[in-house]
Picture (tube, one colour):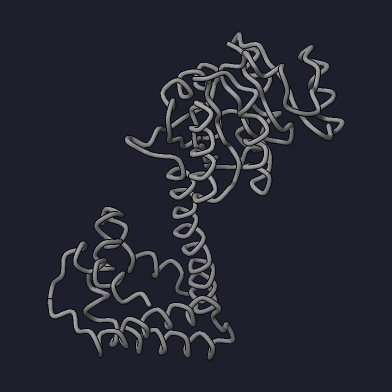
Length: 286
């Protein structure tokens, strides 16, 4: 198959050699090639094009590896050069809404658009970095990329924008946990109780993650007022240790907002389901 790679930064260069090794014919495009890009092109025996053109016309798949800021403009330049039914895989960090807009533009050109989120550090795992994909033609993309050594997870029934949405949501969770864990273990270490803390967290460790997260949300809409006071107590204790928290003020604000909403719009359910809890939270989000 003919695969065109638009953008020869770290991502584009990462996939070029494995795709050629898997037997695919490559087309390379980069407006301002770096020394690393030029060296790669020379080793692969493939010239670097400076812009989209007729050379893309017979490409079965285009990999867009540019920055998110220019992703839509690149699609608008490339799609008119592609044949109908070819696939355009957007590996950029463009927002979910921008990817949905790009999918609509691609559909207008009869090009299949695939939203791809890179779920790890490309410099560490190279082509083995996990990819999350959604959109039209995703099965063919998965087969082609996995034959070149990639790991692709397809979102069942997913549409353009879903992969990037899930990547961002995962980051909300992991980065929030990272910041909280930093403050938690700093405080525990300073008090000399780090190992004992792990013992006190064993019940959480033994609970499936989904059950634990949903339990927090279900009980939050019932006990937010009391828990807001507990957050304040924890914040004061950390300050007294000489470790003022940057995380807990935001946590406390979340609890106070829920508590205030409960004062004016009572939930009226002692044990809400996750759907009921989320429905109430979204209805009172403003």
